[in-house]
Length: 111
Length: 113
Image (cartoon, rainbow over all chains, first blue to last red):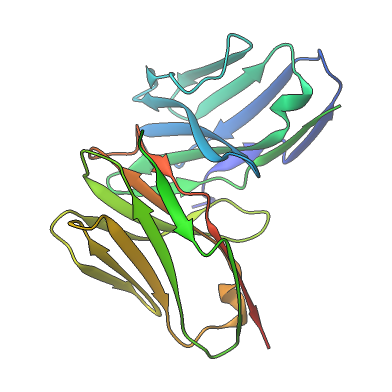
């Protein structure tokens, strides 16, 4: 199994631009999570899907952030418009049962 | 407020030596505690998960302990290897599953030859 796949691995964009991060969970996993990691705040849960349905989006910082999971094998996290404070590493993770598997992350830099 | 505090923030040890990382939490209610290892530039990888009734759990050279009364956990690494250099993150959950978890800020471990 290829594990959780994220793309792009690195993204550099200018303030105000739209950014779309992509995630392919492990096949058969029914839960998907988006996290953000920064030096100052560590790991933060942004949103959690179960069986493609958003269950808890209370961690999404503001309306500029949105996430979708149109099917069991694909999810996106969109930031529009992006701001420099959004610069972070964004992780996608999927679970089935007790173990959670993280993707390699997307390192986002907003100038 | 739910908090997870880890100590030390960073640690340097010689290859072959043992070390212990600490995690104190104030999360309530408590369901389970996990330790993750995160290599530089990679996502976290689960090492152990312990529920309220478990005092210790091992994964190879990693042994985690839990004292639910004092709300403390430790991760002991035996006979450290260079590949143990990473950040170790303690995560506490008030319920079964991964939502509503509280993350510690991690301990950065460097193992030197």
